[in-house]
Structure formats: structure tokens, C-alpha cells
Image (cartoon, rainbow, N blue to C red):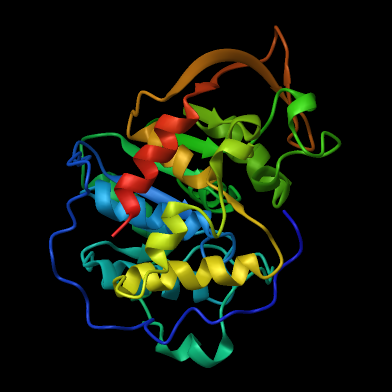
Length: 315
């Protein structure tokens, strides 16, 4: 991940009255079978806020946990977006703060973001799991710190959590820096190593399938133009402001997080296959006949994915 962009306003509309209209996605497909926990590092790369909107518009039983926290601002932004989209029912849990500062948010507008109620990370996830007889889906779209914290504190939850994590690579010719583990894993190598080894039910959406030209959103993309339209709703304006901040130093944002969400929604345009994988100390992953069997992303129909994403999130 490149170094942080300068701060940019998220918009004066950060705390509007909630839109209480039904949040039925344009596709009409609502995922209502299980509780889904979205672990997200929004307020930097705008693929995260796009993903939060997609999750809010498709998942009935949704919980949001903020990854790589920065003073609680990611949690406040998540609460603001969810309230604006009409999903006041979705709990937001502030995750672990690693002391990083990658944030796109104008300090002058920070106080306009709502403060979500404080919920202990481990107790909150434990309570969610205790209140259902179903397995709980964990969608990892950031560092694996929160998941490791939960599993180390309550290892029995490893059997109940179905984890789909974005990150890792197996083909060094298709990753931007093969001398390192992928971004989400290397931010907190210890936690990634713990979580990858402790998860009983794990699959990976690999970086060689997410950071490709076909998933890139620019100022010319329909998705961005819809967010930035003069008559767009407040939640779309908030997303557009995140894109604008990102675009000050970058030409595009790759929709890595939404592809991971699509995987748990069982969308047919992403397929998985099993690999035997060795997890190294630096959490780089290698094919190894003696390694652990892990399902990993295998193929993606990118036009179908991008059409689904635009249809799902555009106002």
C-alpha cells in the first residue's frame, strides 16, 4: 500500500438525518441466512467504503468491526455511513488500533461523525456467536489483528467462524512485490500468522486476483460518477469524498474488498480451488505438498463482478 494521501474532507454531509427508506439492493438479492461480520479499514482506500455500502445493501444480519483503527475514527465513519444509508440496526465495534495513521478525513469535519456505543471486541463477537446456532461469517478486508485477538481470547470460536480473508499471494509473477507478504498480512505479521493457523474454516481471496486492471475505479468510472452526482444521497456523497481524497495522489482504486464480499455472497463470478499451502514466518504463502489445505480464489469473471458491484452500490 502506498504512503498516506493528504487529508481530504469527507463532506459537510457526514451526519445527515438517516435515510429511512428500505435498503433493498437493486439486484433484489438479500443475504439473510447467517450473521456476517465485516472487518474493514475504511477511510483510506475507497474500496473499503464502497464495500461497506455493498454490504449494507445486501446483508440482513450485518456487524461491522473496524480494522487498523486510527483513534476510533474508522468506527465513527462506519457509523455515519450506515446511519445515512438507513442501517441504524447494524452494530459497529471499534477494533484494535495499531498506531498507524492512514486516514482520509478532514480534521474540521471529524466532530460531525457520530460516536458509536463502545462495544468490547472479544465480548461483542462472543455474544454474537452465543446468540446463534449457525456459523458466523467473518469477512476480513484488513489486517488480521482483530481476528487473532478474538481467537487467542476465545479459541473455541475458531470452530464457529467461517473466515474469508482478502490477502496472500501464491504466484510471485502476479504480485507487485514478491519479496513481501501481501499488504493485509504484513501490516501485523504475528496476528496474521496466528489467525491463519488457528482458523478451522478459512479461505483466501488472493491478491493476484484483486489488484488487477479490471477492478480499477477512476474518475471516469460509472460507479464514481454516480457517487459524485449533484443529486446523490448523503451516503454516496460521503463515498465520493473518500474517492476524491484518494484521487489527489492516485489515479484509481482497485475494488479488492468488494470482490471478497462477493465471495461470501456466493456470487458465481468468483470460484475457489484447494491448494496445499505452507505459511512462512513472514506470512508469505507457498505451495507445499506437506502444507495445509486452504481453498483459495481460482478464477474471476471481472466484467460480471464490476457490473454486479455497480448495480449493487449505485444510488
